[in-house]
Length: 378
Image (cartoon, rainbow, N blue to C red; front, side, top):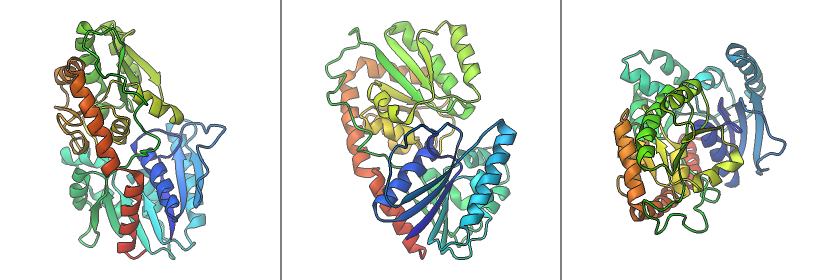
């Protein structure tokens, strides 16, 4: 089977879609599928590739320059790449974003392809639905797809709003590289008590966008650090709100308690998660959360808001804490409870790892995706 995978977001960028396509492509290639990826990225490529997976070919296109020029540069180069590939014999053409994937791949003719698939990762669609906006433009970008994949139950259900009656919709969740994201050799927090003088890191690996709700985590940090000065908050990533978030931290006088380490290097992510006490997803909108699954694969419980796909992985009292969105007080209370009940936190750690291995390995996700391709005639 020959698969053409297209994603505006791809390695070495971080983020849910970039990681999803990166790991899914490799897992499929390991199962004997020939995969060609056309992937966009804004980060600089490192000197060494992460691996050399057999059956996998990558065409990487960097989004350069300022925002407007960057988009045009990427569109032109990626369209040239797609047009050069469009007349080849593809069993499957699979794309992952409304923009620019939908414009470039969703509307391009692939005369020799059998099946075209769209995976709907989009929190944009959820926001538009909540605000009562028309979805007509989104429908246009998926009209040529033979099937749609939803990586969360919510996105699977709501994809019917953009699908035609002839387009099958299936739920296939995000996955995790369970051989790479593993717990530390020795549990770090067993037997720990709330006043033991051991520095604990509360971590959020998020884009600094309004929908990610990091401002509420900062307000929660003010409450937590007043009682637990040994706690350090690390807000990895960057984005349009970085300056605003740093300004709020400065106003609160918490520069030594809330750190902004920047983007996470691909190779450093597992170690960062392993050293975390808990991770936090304070999202206002969240289609799915690969970072939450990666945290759980490392045995680190998650504090997440009751939005999007987060409640599918964060099971209260089993794998973490669920809190209302926009509630700094609720986030702070969950963090304090994790500090005061280390034994509960340890039980959650074991549950997290077990659930991810059983349900969310990339090998399992790739197998289900291939079965969907075959069901549609690939």
